[in-house]
Amino acid sequence: MTLKQSVAFATLAAVTASTAMAQDLTPVSFGTNWLAQAEHGGFYQSVADGTYAECGLDVTIVPGGPQVNNRALMLAGRIDYHMGGDLLQAFTAAKEGIPVVAVMATFQKHPQVIISHPGQAKTFADLKDLTLLIGDNGFASYYQWMMAEYGFTVEQRQPYTFNPAPFVADKGMGMQGYLSSEPYVIEKEAGFVPDIFLIADAGYSTYATTVETMADTIAEHPEQVACFVDGSIKGWYNYLYNDHSAADAMITAANPDMTQDKIDFAISKMLSEGIVDSGDALELGIGAMTDEKIGDFYGKMVEAGVIEGDLDYSSAYNTQFVNAKVGMDLR
Image (cartoon, rainbow, N blue to C red; front, side, top):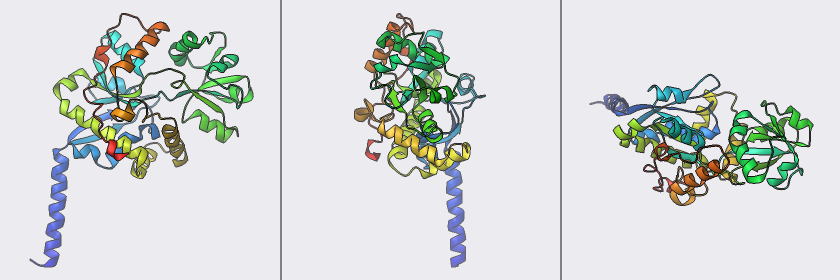
C-alpha cells in the first residue's frame, strides 16, 4: 500500500468511526427558558466540548423566547428536558398534579435583584423607604415574601413595565432586575453603577434555573437522565472555570444580541455572587438539591401566603441524580 493509499484509508476509517459514534448517540432535546445567554452557558459548553456525547447523548438545545413555551412542548412530548424557573414552579406542578420533576438546580441562588441609586439604601430593609417598580409576576411571588418577612407594602409598589427610565429619573425609586441584565444596562446607558441587593442574600432561599423532565422519563430512562445531569454539571464547571470560548460562540450565533461584553459581565456576576457554585454546591457539587433547603423555602412561601400549607410537593423534585460531587475536580 502506498503512502497516499494509507492516508486515504486512515481518513476513511476516521470518518467511518465518527459516523458510527454519532449514530450510536441517543438524540435528546433541551428547551431553555429564554434566548441564548451566559446563564445557559454550562449546557452549551457540554454540547460544544463533547461532554454529553461522551456518555452517549446527542443534545440539541432549543432556545426559548417571547413566543416560545418550551415547557408546554415537554408536556406534549416534543422535547425531553426543560430549563425550569424556581421552586415555586415545582410546587405549582405538584399542586396541579403535573408529572414534571426537577432533577437538578443549576442556580443555588436566585439571580433576582432589587436595584437602587447609589447610597439610597444601605441594607435590603432600607429599600422599604423607596418606591419600588415590581412586575406582576414578582408581586405575586417574591414581593409577597418581602411583605411578610420585611414589612414592605402594597402601596410602595408600582408596576414594572421593563422600562428602567422612571427609575433612572428618580433617586427615590428602586426596581426589580436580573443580576446580569438591568444593572449592566443602567451602567452603560445611564452612566452610573447602581446598588444591587440580591433577594437570595436577604433570605429568599429558592433554587433557580432547574432542569426538569417528565416522571416517565425518569422511570423509563434513568441512565439517560443521569447522563444529561452529569454532563450539565461538568459543563457548568468548565464554563465558569475553564475555556468557555466555544460555548460563547454557540450562544452568540444563536442570539446575536448577546455580545461578548454582556457574556463576560454575566459570568463575572455569577462567579462573584455565587449564583451557581455556593451553598450546598460547595460540598455536594454544582446542581445540588437538598430536602432541607426545599422544605425551608416551602415553609417561607406558606408563611407568606403564596402556597398552601398542606401540599405534598415531594413529587416535584428528585435528588437521586445530584449531590454526588460530579465534576468538582474541574473547578
